[in-house]
Image (cartoon, rainbow, N blue to C red; front, side):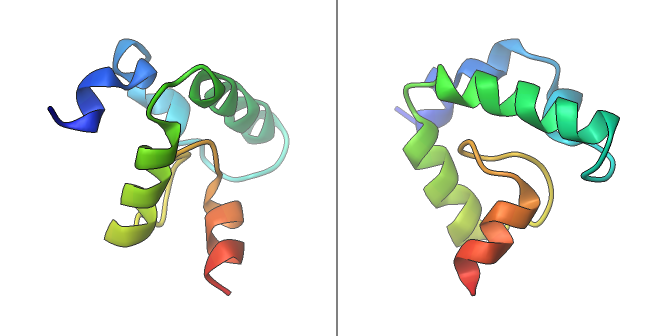
Amino acid sequence: MDWRHNAVCREEDPELFFPIGNTGPALLQIEEAKAVCRRCPVMEQCLQWALESGQDSGVWGGLSEDERRAMKR
């Protein structure tokens, strides 16, 4: 079974995971998305997929765009 079938975010509004910007209200939105990720049993698989597939935007596997970018350095 694909890991995405077990993802907690399937029950959430997808827009939550794609904030516009990374300050002010967007920062609060990022933290809300990360809170969903922390409850997810497939968070590690999600992050691995995001890194391998080059997802540049959004919160994936509990990390923001900036955090994933920093991991690549």
